[in-house]
Image (cartoon, rainbow, N blue to C red):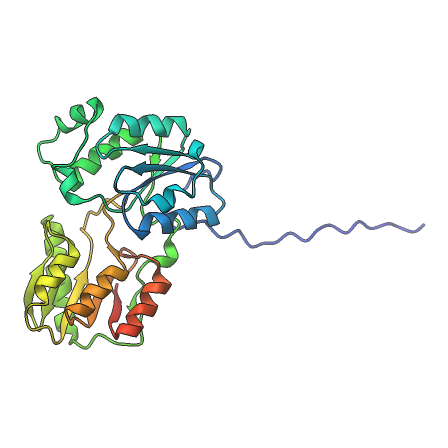
Length: 297
């Protein structure tokens, strides 16, 4: 008697690649992610990466902050527009979207955190609980409100793993300064971050030319550029207890142009923690400008 054989499909032993190393273990890709978007290219980059991963995406845009171009990529039913400070409206939008997750991306003009807010009743009640009012305390309080709603606020590096600074040289150009001077810059930047002053500095041969504070990265670099900048190094790092759900340091094309104008030819960025906004474009432009980008482990 002839025996019949049924060929069984070959089962791959390889597990599918994770969507991102920065997602929570129980992440459900079927639940919508609500992108709370501020200024710049960063929110658009995040939207592209989340869509490429096949995860449903919604948008909470902020009036006069989120680019109209990004808003136009969402149908009206999948986007909401709020004013900066309308916490109640933000929470209502998350409920309407039935969002499982939220993602904060993009800067809000620093001045608007203090003089340009349009607080609703929910925001007024929240602000009244804060003894200190700075970006960290305000966004931290908003994060708690989002989490209390049952929405998981994601690490702001999620989905954009490929755009993080990596250890070692990232360009053909190498940092021209001695290693001791690089270590000095990292020490200064980390201490400034620890003291909540800022996340960046410019150093030259063991001397601090400028540290980042309220004025922001680009203005700090311009100020350093008025001094002698041969062998100067721009350093960007994070706090030792950085809350990666918001205020993750970024480095993009605009800062590259500011470095070039200031005649600062080296930048050291903390690997795995600083986001290069559209990394291929940033590296290509750095090569054109002759600026060395190095990832510090």
